[in-house]
Amino acid sequence: MEAARPWFRALDQRQWYALFGANIGWLFDGYETYALIITVTSAFRDLLPPDRFPSIPFYAGLTLAVTLLGWGIGGIIGGIAADYIGRKRTLMYAIVAYSVMTGFTALAWSWTSFVALRFIVGVALGSEWGTGTSMVAEMWPDEHRGKGAGLMQCGLGIGFFIASAVWFFVGDWGPSAWRVMFLIGVLPGFAAIWVRRRVDEPTKWAEADRRRRQALAAQERGEHITGSARHLTRFTLTDLLATPATRRLTVVAFLMSTATTLGWWGISTWVPPYVASVAARQGLPAARWASFAGMAYNAGAICGYVLLGFLADAWGRKPVVIAWFGLALLFTPVLFLWTHDLSLLLVVCAVNAMFSLGQYTWCSTWLPEVFPTRIRATAVSFCFNAPRFVAFLGPLLAGTLITYFGDYGRAAVLVSLIYLLGMAAAPFFPETRGRALPE
Image (tube, rainbow, N blue to C red; front, top):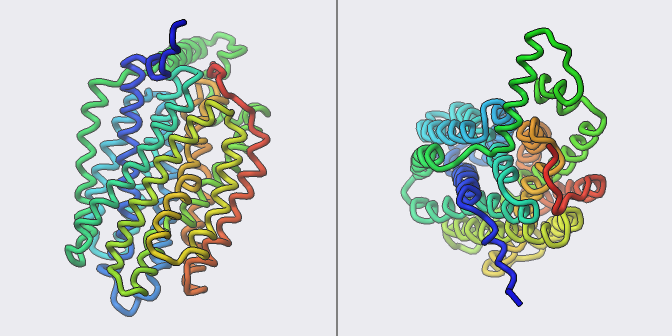
């Protein structure tokens, strides 16, 4: 009897290149985002007068909030662009844009300029994810799509890990060490050259684009447009909300994505400074332990990304995603309230990350499977990014709560209750394991 082929043997070179292109773009997003998280305190110690140092958690929360707001705007714009001009071209433009703007962040001369530049970086960052997610979903086989989504999503964790590792070496370079982190962020722009040469447009998008052009040409000639062709002539964001079915899907996805996004940005972004504060109280170097925490957290996140995708292919999207929400809720107090030994704290950081950050894989796995090709990038980008218009309040709220309570623990536990929203909404999203993408 012939042995079953390993799952990865079912994939061709085009599919692996699509995954790598999307992964590398998301990896650089991850580096840039986590570079901000682990350097924001140092940046404001460099940019603010000493009398404002006690308010640094507020300024840090404001910066994260503004970045998140820009990310939401850029994400929706990028998704729309990917549906009209293609996945590949949008991916290249996104990589170049955020690389250039990250370099400009290193030149900030005041706290206001730093915050303003972070908004622009956020706009550029947001346009990448929906493009890569749609590209992988459209090119990978139905039965392995969750695996592809998990492997793509882990690029963020790898980028986070690299940023933590780089900060480990440059964090002691003086008050302006944070600028070095953002200067390094310019390098990813060269990845756009590889994407241009190696990555193909998905045939599903190419066919949808051909039909869209035909429908628009017929409309311009004054012909009567009916049926599916009528959808193709609508603006993609309008088409997303045009029918009760897609509106319902969008609302449920929005609620789930809000839980994931607000939970991570409002809680987990404070892991490095929290561990640093614990280390400082014990007379240990805070910056170094913040790097250790970042590396442990992101090693766990990488495992969580991949594991969710593989389990979603094996057991279904719905039960796995609900479990991830529940475990993220459980491990928040374990991390911030109940663990005090520094070595054990690093282990808990990794476990917490599997579920708090690792849960993002549900977005790249589940969202593309419920929306048709003509609006897929717009839909997944809207559902992934629109919650940032709410979730940007998370870091601001958490920063204010930390300042008010004087510690991280109670603030984190209060914000973590948002995971209950994800657990309540997920049962209303359709199970799609193994199904073909809707056309």
